[in-house]
Length: 265
Image 1 (cartoon, rainbow, N blue to C red):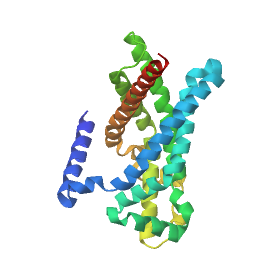
Image 2: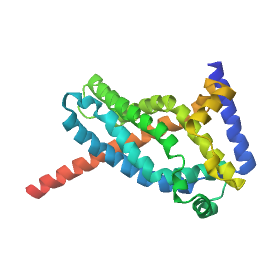
Image 3: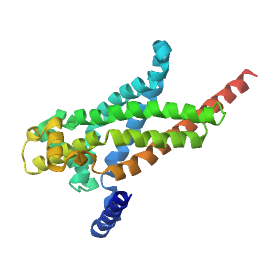
């Protein structure tokens, strides 16, 4: 507990220093690409997951309980592929402290120097982080939701049940996949530094070499740097997103059923 308290104090101190030196607006550096990324990513991800889960449950028969695992992984592959360029741009903007106005310049510079494929650089490490995360998240979420419903003797999950299930499953998945997040971020920052020195980002290290270097320099613990802020960020984000999504689905399902009944009477 002493270690956790010390880490929390360090992050709080860093938070205060950033605000003092760069202003509170700096905490939202990279917000435009994040917002642009979030909408299509969420729509693609959740829609694909629901459709895939329904289809896989029919096809998998006695193994239908594992459908969320596979559906979550496949849905994330599609989502990551679509939004990978925006993820790379966002990381660059945050690491280089670029202003919002420099967003188009960042894109043009990357394409001009490395070609369109450079916008998908970091796609592999992102998949290594997000696909296992998604598979674990949805599997644990569906299991947790079903258990809480059974424990409370209700058929449909409440907002609180989906919120708790989302927070717990998100926390578990974020901890397990943290090493891949550390590697992905380090690689993208490294690419940004190479481009700032007018060097080709093709010279950047591979995922395995970056991971090996981190372990050599800082031990295995180096792969779990940022553990606390990641959990603090991911757990509430997963809880809010899934509970709002489930609430919205239930609301519109009920609304459509009522409208259908009204039209037939």
